[in-house]
Length: 104
Image 1 (spheres, rainbow, N blue to C red):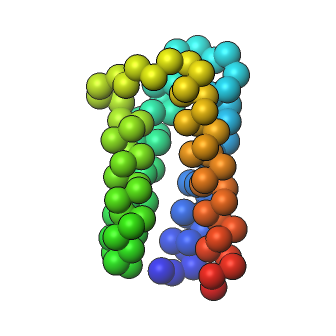
Image 2 (cartoon, rainbow, N blue to C red):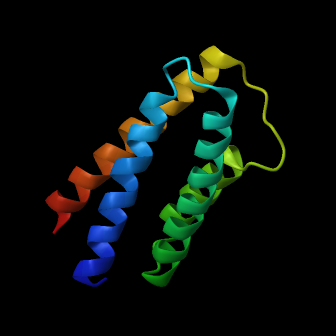
């Protein structure tokens, strides 16, 4: 993966994690819809990139996350459970940035 692609992925993961953490605040409903669209597109992009370097376990994880956050059919988990999901996914995204650096 080229330097520019790595920087793009780092930027997207960082912004996406921030968006998930902001979901913990009392935001207008449109914000959550926007986060779902951005998350769906981002996780789809991550799955595509992981598939290019033949990391099938990452492809599976990113596709599962894209389906969880997809904006077409609302998944009703309740606010408390969505908050937990947002934190876990946000922490996972941030952690993945540091794990990549260790493995290089």
